[in-house]
Image (tube, rainbow, N blue to C red; front, side):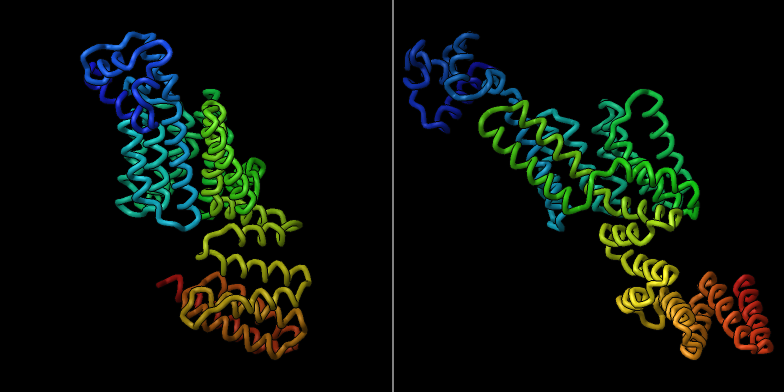
Length: 414
């Protein structure tokens, strides 16, 4: 900075604190000396700069226009507060864009990358792709764990583009590279393993999803409400430490808050991990499904409730199964309509209500045929055929299965 710029900055900071030139100068300098520095007539010595900075309550670097520890912590804190609002459903996109630009002006590429990353999490389509690219650019020279934070979002972009297998390759490669190179960052490992479990589940690879789901669930720290409470504590702690000028401790507190925020953003993928574990570990399936339903996105709630009904029925909790089914609202064109009817029919069989079972399974077969729900059609035909045979209605059972095979053949041809 030039002498004039240093002087102007000194004058502004002094005025902001309500100090006179004499108060700033004493006891080592005079008001006239301060005046000459503020007008740019004199360049302050190193000792004078340190004295002025101490009087102003800042670092000498900040006085010279550099970034102070306070500014960095404040940036991290503002970023954490905006991310927290975003997770709570508050639109913080404008604030995050401003924070990203502010971080770039300060030369803090990591914070800029994190801001772009948060924006990308809640974007879609071309907008998300551009934000992911901005985050990747910001993290180019950063350490592997921070570069790795972008990989799940790049994988999401690839999946949107119809390349789910390449997305899985990208996630697996990042995970393996981190372990090989000695960067087992717990948050990033949790993130990658949760996304790998989620991706394998969506591709129908339950056996491959299971170990990643188990590993992710071991690393996860708690439910959404627990994480929210811990985040609030860390942010309050950061504010207090910042006010008391304990900058190093404040930076540690806000860093912990950032890790917790990133974990909280993983809750939908953690819900999918619980879903995987419920399907491979029947003994704890009810508890895992209930936890998954609490953590999942609204659009997946009904499907998990349907699984809860099926598991409850298999365990003989028939009233609970009926209660779960009663929670699911569907109309005749809903993709879940056939599955709900099938579950109602299977539940009626378990209750020994043959007439209700036959009516519900008949509706399930009709809906599954119309909605092209092949899996539900197969299960409904099997249950209905077994029910008819148990009543000695062998001819009707044979006709039903014959018609069912024709329907399945027609679906296969179409």
